[in-house]
Image (cartoon, rainbow over all chains, first blue to last red; front, side, top):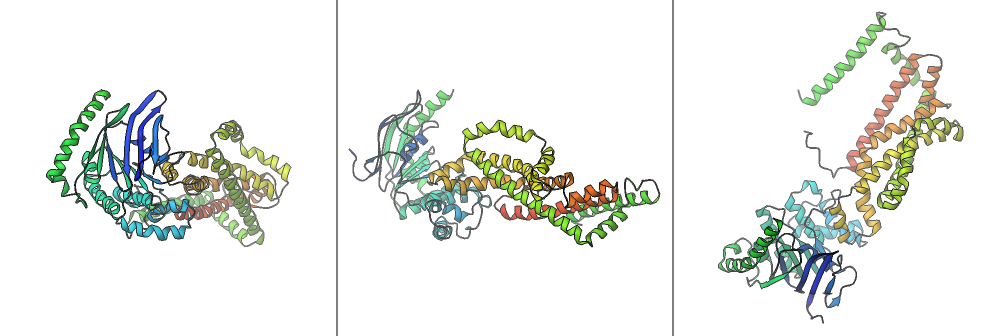
Length: 262
Length: 257
């Protein structure tokens, strides 16, 4: 069944919580070096899709394949960056970045040694000994990003990682993320409700319908050439055209979700 | 003058004023020295004590009892708190027993411990432990229960094993709670040691006070209380230092300038 070259392959996946159907039918294929953004109105079950890919959530129906193999138990090849703050407040930036390595049995000294270049990669050289409360919101996000990527997961999952940041900081994060991904391409699934963010970053944008019982309504290839300049990009005709095209689909779903909320 | 200097000066003035009023009151005959011995006689008494070896033995014994009951109480309480914090089933089973045990005025166990363990060190430590244990237990329990769920989820997503979670997430989280209760625990440990000494012993600061009380020597009782207070303040300073070192990662409270 599984096609070669697909890191994530969801086929007709349905997710239910008791009698409640969160996702009715989801088809999502992500290539080994592909950056896919999933957009949809609030409450459409975007996060549950990531939980399905990690194996935390078992689908009620359908097929989850990771690198062509049916997923049983937890997915050992994925790294997950959460929307909320998950750093340990009692560990310094470098110890937080190296945390996963320590969990894998690496010594603290060795983990630090590996963590330092990663802090430099996310532009936090010189912040090694800072505790999370001594960092700004954007800096903490960068530590969290390094914490996920240092484990070199084959599949990177990000659940609205930058939604709490202000516009300028968010743009900086986009640049850092794209630079890192460009340097070492991996399969990346990025959940967001910000269409501009999705188009800026991804190779493909997948649009989901309003929940409950949501499904995929569109899968649009983003033809913007790489490497991308995240600031200049947003005013190009091509970007605006794509934004309009996808918004014509997404906007209707957002309206529906407003209507459902009353 | 900086604010801190002003505060210290005012505090000093208050203490000096009170001592002066007390001293003058005794000297003028307004205050009966049988009940309220003059500060000067207390100073003299403490001076006499500190020049004898027996007094330092007493201090040493009380200190030893305090430290032992503090360490044992924190150790047992923390272990119990972690265990029950991580096992909801065990917590539910044990909870009523803990409530009942905690409801017993622990001081009343003192005489029983003296009967069980004799007049020596063990009965003092036993009473101190029962006092410290619950403070440490409740705080650890709370600390383990109130670990930030996002932090926990994140650590799990980084594939932390159970022992890793305990070492890197649960214990540090509980430590903040334990440390914030440390000052109370030190006080409890001293109280346990001194009360047990007072109830029945052959040495220690509590014994010293009990002896003075036995001959209606108010000077001795007051002097003993002052020495004990100084003792607790000194221990408190050590705890303060430990806390500052262990909690460097915590943001400074906003109101402090």
